[in-house]
Length: 277
Image 1 (tube, one colour):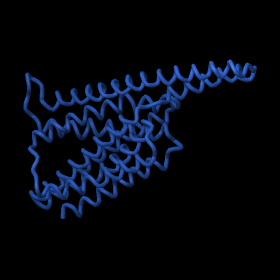
Image 2 (cartoon, rainbow, N blue to C red):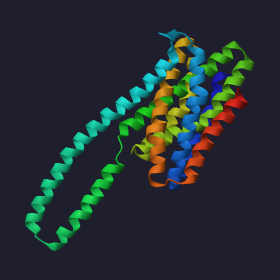
Image 3 (cartoon, helix red, strand yellow):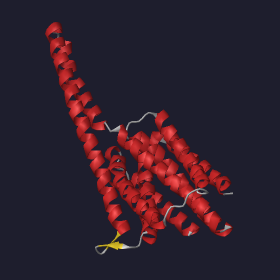
Image 4 (cartoon, helix red, strand yellow):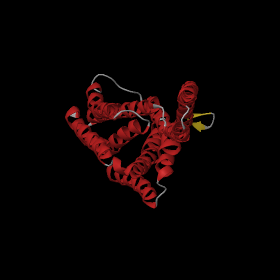
């Protein structure tokens, strides 16, 4: 029964990813909405659940909040390390290009070459500014897949308690899996990954709840461990929303409509949380 119900989460996740890829011509609106959805999921869904599940304190602070901060810092550290590696690699490539250009200039000695060089430099700077680390996008999407796997486990465990509890949890998971699919595809593409990889991560995210529901028949995750995971995942997700998604959304199109999409994303998650309890 749990696996059958989890198929609803599978379809809803695919629907979210399909919506994200269909509106790519309004990229700033997509990113604004994704940022709002992620903010809503973290603040209104993941963090309250983490605090409820892992309510013990460490040196006066709830363990879930400590892991929440750790997740935020971990995401920041990983992104900085990848950015530093990319910058060093890009500097080597840039030097090689400059040497090639000098040799070419010595051979050509034409005015056309001299006028084209500044334009090429501008294009190079623009491309470097737009560059993202694909690994960050894939890691973030993999974290979304892990979260969806846990959702499936929650569905299976709740049906073991009773049909009413299982139905309530399943409705909650299915309702917010639209946002999961939307964010998985958007995150993967934002960091420069090919559409093929984004679709692969979307499909993995859609399958994860079904796999989790099936696995729940053979394993049980302690509640405090689950709460700690939700706190860690929530911190990483908040970093991506606040430091990457929303700044990118307003970088090219700082429009009021982008801000409204962000607010709408938060409001949607609030509605889902309120309806599903």
